[in-house]
Image (cartoon, rainbow, N blue to C red; front, side, top):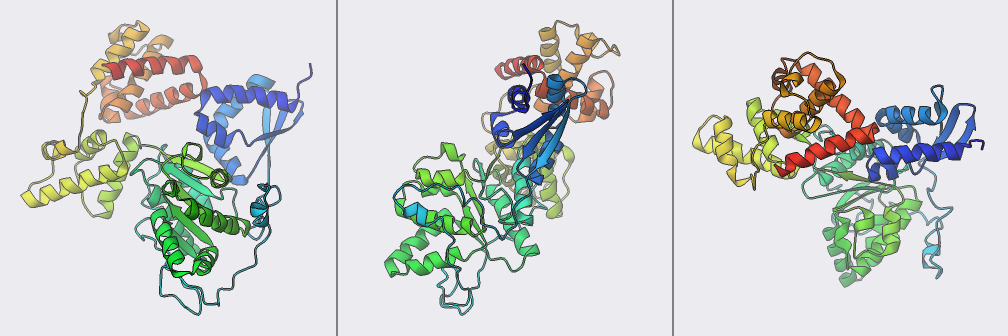
Length: 475
């Protein structure tokens, strides 16, 4: 049977789906369409230039391998990039469904523009201004510069930066940032707002929490000025709504936000929202509102890994003009792994204790002062134990892992041991290399990268690492 572009691409997707997280697959691969197959060249269509750049930066190796597997060693992949609409267009209006009763249907047409020279009551400043002026309600300390990038937030940060450069003009509208408490949602969305205000000074940008919006709506109902309330919000160029999960159960507030959302979206204005869960997991919100949250991009913030936590602390110390021993920063980052807010709080507490007691900050003081922050700490995993566990799993002698041999099974055990040592201990790369036969830090970096690549592309290898990880957690 002759291969078609759809057949080849679907076969590629089956492999890709097995090798990346479900959310990443849904975000970056489900929107792709197979266009044509000419000889050994498969052409796929991606929705934007940003989309293409993200694939090339993060998944090029996986794509190359899967295409070659389907089309042979000469197999190639080409992209067809959909040119983004200009910011003056009205995105997503042509195919939006009506709910059948005419209510939503009316909201699909282009609304009449609101003059910024009429009297609009502004719930954030003194009402009755002749020209709409808005305090964006942004914390100037929340910027991209001090938002540390890591694997835990790379998608969200990159999407946020794209939105800041072209608000309302990307496919990320709305941009939904979700994740647990203290992971940086508010910081990131306010960084987007601050960047827009810095580069596009004429834009009306507003950050508001769900609770404040709800209270303003209640006040507007009491004072019989709902029209002014709606007109004010519909005049925004960028609306940042924090913690939309708190709309749960508030039907009237959801309804008014639904109409404001529709107006802004159809006018090509940018909506940025945060939540503690992904849209599909939110409860107590109307389905019509949830469906609109899914129109753009939903990106999650996860708990940062050790390197990212250390980078966050180093950046904070730099901005505060404080120098701390590297072992103290590594100790705090290793033991405080719940969220960024708790991590920074622990460091502030440590600095305060040092000042009050007039003591230099060292590792002993850090261990003493952080007892209240470290809960249920399990016994520390040592490199010796990791090495022993890996060698037992692959049935290789321990002394061989530290030797110079290049036998495949020994190299595999050594690289996995280095990878797990980096992941589960607070030991430096230099010390890990020295422990495994006097190797340097670059060897450790190469070993960790090799393991990461194999986890992404080799299901059997991924199973090996997962089995050993389970044994470590049970220890």
